[in-house]
Amino acid sequence: MKILFIGDIFGEIGRNALKESMPELKSTYNPDFCIANGENTAGGRGISYNTAQEIFDCGIDAITMGNHTWARKEILRIIDSGIKIIRPANYPKGVPGKGRLVLEKNGTRLAVVNLLGRIYMEQPVDCPFQTVDRELSYLKGQADYILIDFHAEATSEKIAMGYYLDGRVSCVLGTHTHVQTADEKILESGTAYISDVGMTGPADGVIGVNKELIIKKFTLGLPVQHEPAKGRAQVNAVIITINEENNRAAEIKRISHII
Image (cartoon, rainbow, N blue to C red; front, side):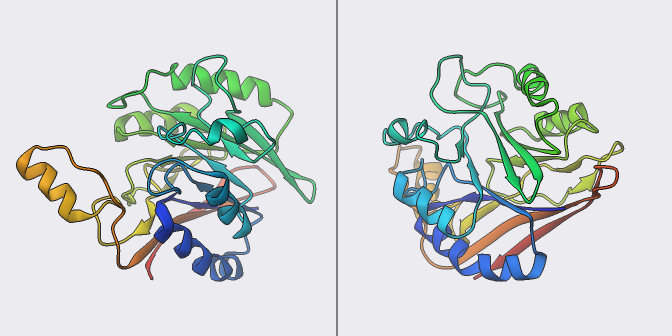
């Protein structure tokens, strides 16, 4: 069984890169499920109905989110409409949307859980470790495989989550920093792990944003209005292969190319 996970899709450049790349990615890897992080799809911050539909039209089965989930008010009108958008499960009780979703294809059930980290993150959220324990108890008997998108800043927090869930889930995939890490591995008890999948979006900006604006911000210390960078695009993703006989991950492979 194979899962293709696309790193944070950033703005129009990221959406166009996804459209261009998905046919080849599907042909090359033949994934059973395709998941993408889409918290930056609309102008580099948040998601809208139209940008979500663009992502789904590319063949993505579900979209995970992160700390920019509520950046656009439009999401409040659509997140409970049945759309396959998954927001962090450790938001406070009563928040709209769902923190987990079970996808089914050809008799195979994949659960996707989204979590938000707490270290160096501005939003107050519940403990992701305690939250994931609850989510896994809810999912008992409901899924054959489980994917965790851990949207977090600190590498230490992500690595700890990987070890915490080793053998309990199929894969723990870090998102948020927009920089793909080179630490993909299969943990001791069979869980696939990477600290950050990276970003699908502008290749020549500062984590997606116009580099001149960010340089100005750092050199002068003045606030600037972020704008998505222009120019070339990059695609960052991972493909995970899971052994169906023992439910252990057999391989995790990084995908990174410039368009």
